[in-house]
Image 1 (cartoon, rainbow, N blue to C red):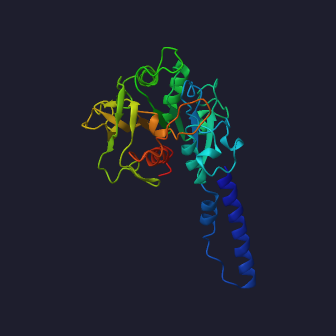
Image 2: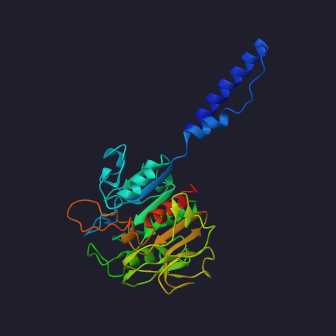
Image 3: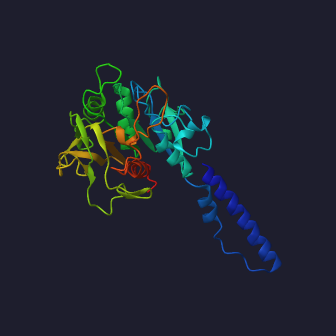
Length: 318
């Protein structure tokens, strides 16, 4: 990796300086150069957004940019959500502007894989974002996703309400996500400790639980107080199946194991997050012909902080 090359060059330079200092009778410099040089390189947290499962069907436009696979192909220095085209562009641009993330999109027609050596293979990424999938994952894709998480990857799932089949193939995101967790061939025994409720909740403003130590609710992108729910669903938690499962936001009047709207969990060495509606991530801008709404900046929630903190947590940037 680049880090090792940089460090070795720094070490060689330092050794030369020590030798020169010794020969000239000067005090040898303290060997503290390597750490700043390594830090200056910076760690790129690699995030792959999925567009292989009809994420732009109907009125959906759940992409960070029309520059696919590389959003930098559309605009290499984005400054606002309109620099990139897509209803998730605000999310992508916010990550890009930190200088700490490398973003890609798996294109329509692409296949989710793990360990095949391809450029967009999950092994090359820290986090995989699946924003409201509308095509069922194949058996091989389900195994790839689960193995990726099991081996330390981050998985960010976004569901929508039941009967939200945008491409009319008989599968909507609640059914697709439940299928991933119950028929994946790696662990079919409720591995994440939650299931997607088959509900269509028209509107609510779920609130965050009080947990000052939680890195998703209190992260580098701000404090999460709540989210918006505009035709979405919730989750049922099953801590007996996975004690790591945790409800972070709940539908009004709910707590404990029912009515959770944003959930985190772990599986193997990896991390998982799921959101019950695509509306909060919608920035209201995207490709023409779609009816989009700005949930990202909706004052009824702190949706941007929630999406970004969760991405950072999943990517181990926080």
